[in-house]
Image 1 (tube, rainbow, N blue to C red):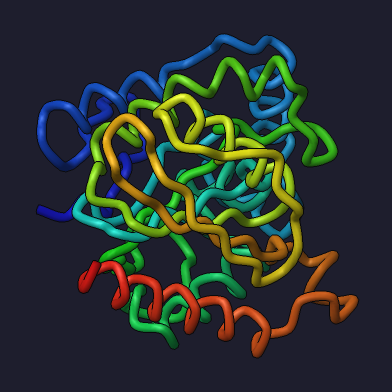
Image 2: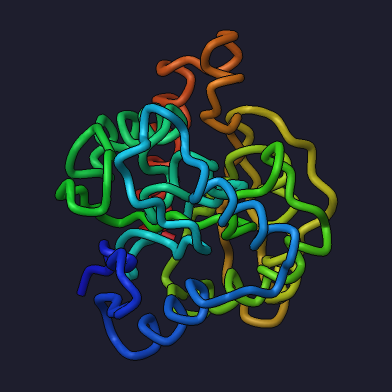
Length: 251
């Protein structure tokens, strides 16, 4: 069963997937816990960007997207104001998504290299994408309290995809969110250095299970336009991810 369509754009929200995913994603979309974020995401949806003036913006929290049988969990920061906040799907409709999905396509995780809207036919295989914050924040900076309010959603996603072997954190804030999540589930996750292409193996004392944690620069326009992150650098990360997934099958 694939869960590759988070929602439709009208008020009759009917996400695909089994009952647990339906309940979770319906709750995410309906959330109004953070007044600052509610006000901002809805203001952006009303005022729009001139290039998208004919769009009906999503303007709500954005659910995760991908394959719930995934062994790879990708965690970002938050929806872009005129990307996911417009389209209603993670990393869809902006330059960050252009960079990420192109790399995922080259690595065999995405069915196509572009993500324009929820009806573009994109599906993910063996990968699921989520974020530490579900609403577009002003200046792309959710507050600690806002991320804490979103944490239960990430925790519930984690419980629904227990087969995950590799967690890919896009950016330092995502790494910190992943570490908190892993600690909550019993993994030995000390304070770790952030850098592009770093790899950590984390074990659970309670279950004997292990996870691989990989870090990468966020595919934001700021990083890609300055050359801090290149397509080749992102490809190298997904080569590492593939090798770790293969290794986990033999462990």
